[in-house]
Every structure is written in C-alpha cells, then in structure tokens.
Length: 141
Length: 141
DNA sequence: TTTAATAATCGTTTTTATTCCTATTTAATA
DNA sequence: TATTAAATAGGAATAAAAACGATTATTAAA
Image 1: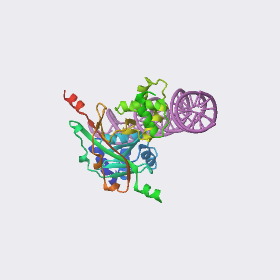
Image 2: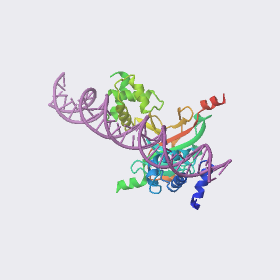
Image 3: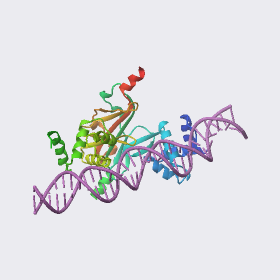
Image 4: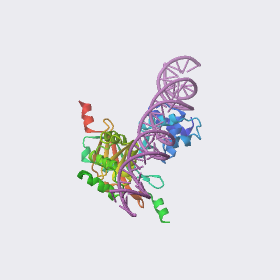
C-alpha cells in the first residue's frame, strides 16, 4: 500500500471496517473532491481510475462510510443525495441558477429551542437556497 | 362553492392559478394536516374523498403549489419529499426511532455568514435528527 | 348562456435513483 | 498457506417522480 493511502487505511481500520482497494479509493476521492458529489458522479468519475467499479459497490460503500461517520450525507434537494467528507459543522447554500453548493461557517451552538428540551439531538443541518454572487452579477451584465 | 372553500379559492386566485376542485381540496388537506405528508400519503388519504384523483395530479398540484409559495417542500431525508402548509419559519426535528417530525421555533435572523455577502437568499432550512422525548422515555421503561 | 381557447386532470408509460440478488473475488486470521 | 467471512461486480428488481397524450373542466368573451 502506498504512502498516501495509509491515512485512509487507518481511518477505515479505526472504524473496524475491512480494508479494500475500493473503499480506500472512494474515501480518497471524497477527501479530494469537496464538491458534494452524488453517488452517480462518484461512480462516473471513478470509473476512469477503476474501470470495473460497480454501481452497487459505490452505493454500499458510501452508505457504509456514512454509517462509520467518515462521510456525511446531504439531502438539500429532492431525490439527489450528496456526500461530503466529514469536516467541521457548516451550512450549505445551493444556487438555484447554477446548481453549485457553497459551504459557509455557522455557529451551530446557537441553534436550539425549548421545544426540544429532553430530545437527543444527533445531527444539525442548515441549508439555504437562493442565487449566488456570480449568477447575480452575470444577470446584470 | 361552499364557504369553507372561499379562503383557498382566493389563495389560488391571488397567485394567478386556475381554480379547480382538486387544487382546492389538496390545499385544504395540507392546511388541515400539518403532519408533513408525502405525496403518496396525500394521494391515499384524498382518494377517500376524491376516488378518481390521480397520482399525476397530486404530483403536479403539489409542485405547482410549492412554486406559488403556498406550500413548502421538506427534504429532510433521502428520497422522501414532504409537504407543509406555508406557515411562519420554523425548524424541523425528525426522530430516528419513530419517524415523527416535530416543528420547533427558531430565530432565523440569526442564521447568517459573511461568506454569503452578495448572495440572494430565498429560503432558509434547519433540520435536526435524533431521538424524541417519547422514544427516549420508552427506552428506559 | 353558449362557445372557443386554454389549462388541468387522468391513466399510462418512461425515467431515474437506489436497493436487491448471487456468483465470484478479496481480505483477515489462524 | 488454508480457511472463512465479508466485499465486489453486474445485472435485475423496485419505487418515486416526471413526461406524455387524450379527455375534461375552467375561464373569458360573444
């Protein structure tokens, strides 16, 4: 196993997951592509590197990595699940024109409500929709 | 047109939408069922009242009502779009055990980030996942 | 009120994302 | 290295949503 893979091998190992070439490569892909790809994009991009990679492996692996807390699932829009490498908490903005998703910082500790007293909160999600700066200035021109 | 329908007729009319029996009934249903139903639940519940109602009409109508800003779409979880009558902004909590969705109050004006300066924000969404009070206490018992 | 134009509805078909199935391959371990 | 347990590949099955086209209902004008 090459040097650059040690990190991902270790991450998988620490979660008690079996090490496989596919899992390492998919995790590496997500770490290097912070563009919130869908399963379909992961598959088509990775086919260039692993031509025999199958649809079912991509779905199973992404789900397994989410369960292991190594990836996060984004459900911003109807029927398109997107994945991202699990970094620090942040919000997401989706541009309704270009479709790009932008990350933004946010203090998640502010997000609370008395109505949820006694509830166990495992996950907080914030996403906005609108039009991004670039599309707005493109409109004016 | 009966009295109770005047309100929904007016709402549709103000948005420039054509008035139809199905649209009035679907809008009324959402106003009276603040349980965040899926399109499928809307269809099966409404078949009792409108037996000939079709799947395609439900989908088209719900989308049209969302576009007209009379309903809001919730995409909390992968492949299940839910709809709610468009009330004041609030957050959503989904219990991972019982599947119930709870509304909670939140000051949405606090949600901002310098990274979004110059962006046009049309919609803010906040949703949490976890375990609700009832399921937690059921566990202990 | 009748008519013409337009839009909505119904029922079906198609699309598309995801899951399921099973033979084969791979990784962990003794 | 042999064993066994799990992961992968490839394709079939599933299900939600969208697209299609014929029919019907709604609107606005004669």
